[in-house]
Length: 430
Image 1 (cartoon, rainbow, N blue to C red):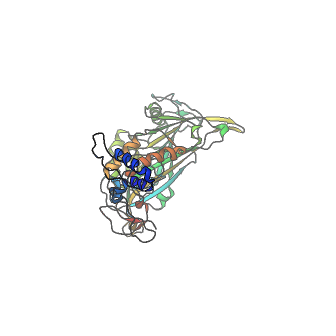
Image 2 (cartoon, rainbow, N blue to C red):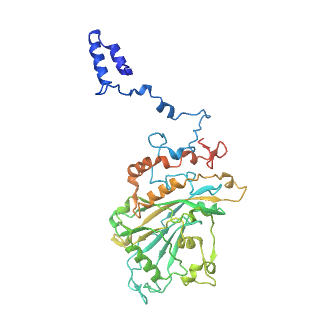
Image 3 (tube, rainbow, N blue to C red):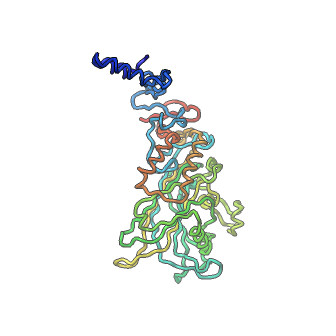
């Protein structure tokens, strides 16, 4: 009978008078009921796990081993990769713009990121109801509609409001007003063309507690909409707002709930457009856009900006935030609730050949199966906001469970150490 390592050690340490009895005990333990010897389970003799264990590489000091090869096939049981904290792959706040993959090969492109702060003028109004002809008469006109979307332009968010007339009344026939919110980085270093890869927003109500209140509705839109301050009337905007209120996927939050920051990510709504480079900051005459004719927009001198065009035909889901009218009586008068929305957008871009940013282009890995899994996970969240306080608990847990499909941290570095391998560049952390 062959004894295990621990049994052999126990027999060697036992007193001579007890050794025979211990030997019989071990023989019984190592045998089955029919007397056949059980297979040995001595892990000291199992070299498979040792052979499969990850090994360190003899790289120069400060450089990490390349994780691109085979990383997507790793499992939590065999991987030592630390999962990033956050709300999944599409979290633009927690992920570096270099840590992206594409559904199909797109060739070399430069990852960029821009931040947009939406705060100026984002204060809830008093209620106001539309008067005039049409079915929109009587609808609420005092609400503010903010739409966030990763458009290939400096504008990453736009707020729409019904416009009162000279006496302060809302009518269905007057044109709406809008406010563009731009990213300084995307305005100053504009590329030639780009595709969006991530876009996330964080929203917070920073009103003093004594005046907090009101309602905010969130809808992650899966279809486009035609909105333009030069063409859209108060009645049309109010009708669209009413559609958001009654949509089955819309989620409603109280102003007091948003005193803590909440986050929402855009996700892919049209996979073909998500791998299609669009001209940056393109201005297109309306007569070249067939859908503008159906909307009754000006076909002679009218033009549509990039944000307007992509809001009608989006590649990533626009996020609509409807701030319902609310004002509170506080010392010194009546005030509305003040909100701030922080938008982070990431793109893969093309810059002029030979420029510094063009020389930083990489070939992102092509990983359709993994991206489909991440997209499905993000779509499953619907229009629900995620509280940032739960990121370490819920988000990190999700990322840990999905870490075998998260693109390796090596792609987040900024320096090449060797030529690209199978479409993914090896990078070093220095």
